[in-house]
Image (tube, rainbow, N blue to C red):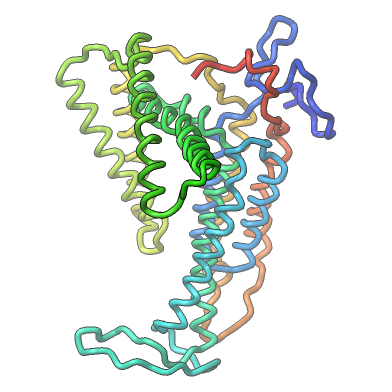
Length: 395
C-alpha cells in the first residue's frame, strides 16, 4: 500500500513529483493515483445503501462517511470542487420535499396537528389533491425521512464527482464508447474557452462605454462568440482528421447487429435492475436483472470495441487499492441490504405512532466500513505547476 511516493504527513510534493499518474523510480513505473472507476463504485454503493434505509441516523452516518472521505482524499483541482454544489442541491431537495408535504398534504394520517392552513377547494377532476389543510408532525417526519434519503443519494454522487478525475475516467472508457468519450473531452475542454470569450467581449464593450447587458448586448456579444467557436471547431476537426481521429475498422454486419442488440438490451436490463433495487417492491428481481444486464452490456461493449482498434496511453491500472475502495462500498451496500431484511423496523422506523429513531449497532458499524478509502487511497495531489506543463499527458 505504500508504493506511492506521496505521504499524509502534510509535506508538499517536490518538483519531480508534483503530479502525474506515473513516477519513475529505479527504472520502474510506479502508479500513485487511484482508478476513477473505483471511486464511482464506492460512491454508488453508498448511494445504494442509502436507498435501503430511511433511518435518519444511518443516513446522517452515510453522509458523514462520504464527507470525511472527500475531505481526506479530494485533490485540489477545479473538478473536485463540485461537492459543495451537490450538498446545496441535496438541501434544496430536502426543503422542496418538506414544502410539498406542507402545501399538498400527505396520505399519512396523523394526530399531532402542528398548524392548520387555509384549504383551497379544487374542482372534481382534481380529486385526491389537497392544497392547504392540517399539517401534522407525522406528515413532516415522513417527508423528512424520504427527502433525507434522496439527499444522501445526491451527496454520494457528489462525492464521486469530487474524487474521480473525469478526464481519466473518460480515458478508461472501452473502445466502443471511444467517439463519445472524445466528444465529451472536447466539450469539457472548450467550455471554459467559451466562458472566457464571453467575459473578454463584455469587458471590451464596457471599456468602450457600450452596454453589455440586455437583448442587444446579448446579441452583440453572442454572435462573435459563436463565430469564434465555429472557427475553432472547424480547425479542431481538421486537425483531428489529419491525425486519424474518427477512423474505424471494418466489422461484419452480424457483429454490428449483435453488438447493438447486446448493448441496448443490456442497458435496458441495467435500468430495470437498478429500478428494482431502488424500490422496495423490486428487491427480488432487481439484482438478477441488473447482473444479466451488466453481462449483456459488457459483452456488447467488448464486441463494439472491434471498431476502434486503438491503444491507450498510460492506462490506469485497477490495483489492490482500487479493489479495497470498491469493495468497501460494496460491503456497505450488501450489509445494509441484509440488515433491511433482518431488522426492517430499525432501518425503516415508522411514524405512526411517532417514535424517536434509534441507531442500530451492527448496521452502523457496517456503514463505517465506507471509511476505508480514507486510509488506503493515495494522498491527494495538487495540480501541476506551470513549469511542469511539459510533462502533461496528451489528450
